[in-house]
Amino acid sequence: MPTTPDIHGIIAYPITPYGTDGIDRERLGQLVSTLVADGADAIAPLGSTGESAYLSREEWRAVVDVTIAEVAGRVPVIVGASDLTTAETVDRAVYAQNAGADSVMILPFSYWPLSAREITQHYRSISDALSIPIMAYNNPTTSGIDMKPELLVEMFATIDNVTMVKESTGDISRMTALTELTGGELPFYNGSNPLVLEALKAGARGWCTAAICLRPVEVTGLFRAFAEGDLELATSIYTELKPFLEFIVSRGLPTAVKEGLAILGSPAGVPRPPLLSLTVDDRATLASMLPSA
Image (cartoon, rainbow, N blue to C red; front, side):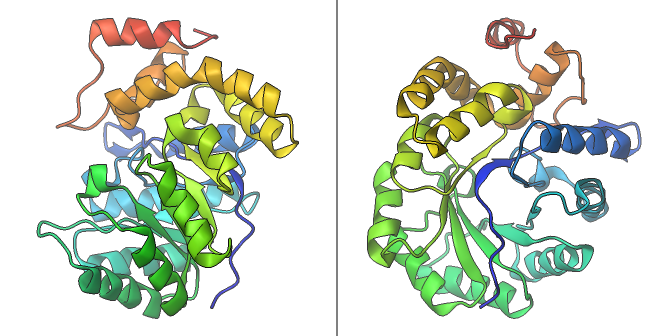
């Protein structure tokens, strides 16, 4: 089993900016550098926020290359390498590894529902091609596939490179089960923004979030307060932040974050169709939630 990098704290999910000729490499580099400077403990390009499902292979690779070059080893990089087929997912994961990624994040999604046997073989095939850790990403809302805690624990025990889990169902009992079934040995990370405080209390080692792109002070402040044992401060920050977290999730993270960056005077393009920009009313609501707007 590979040595898992010390991934903890705020795992930042950048959007993917587009220019007239595809990926805006310069703007992406600026966004990634800002996230590191704002206190991100790891950078995770090409997740749901990064619109990875809407990118060509060449665009996907460009995001990998720019992100890893910009981070330059300052924090771990976890590359979202998911694709519809096992073969293409392996191709992406190997590319990310060769480019210098510290880990890959894999979300299983498929036109056909997948059985536990098929999911397990998918991850095993990816693991066999790699020497870096895999973060198994459970997000049935986007993938249509729900990996129960028992399946995740079984893969953790039997597939060498599956070493951590991003749990995004919004069900705190899933996180509790991961802890109970492994005696706390399986590192898991919260991927449900509105659930963050309860997730940290349940033992999550980090918060996978795009919210840091728009409200870095509060996002990092919440995690640091909790880590330092100041539950009163963490709760206060969370209570104020929760409506914002619920809003950006409900409107779609790529859409909301790109709109928010534009409101803050740091535009990064619009989402790629079929995604659309926020309505006028939603834009006004989001603006009211951004202290610097």
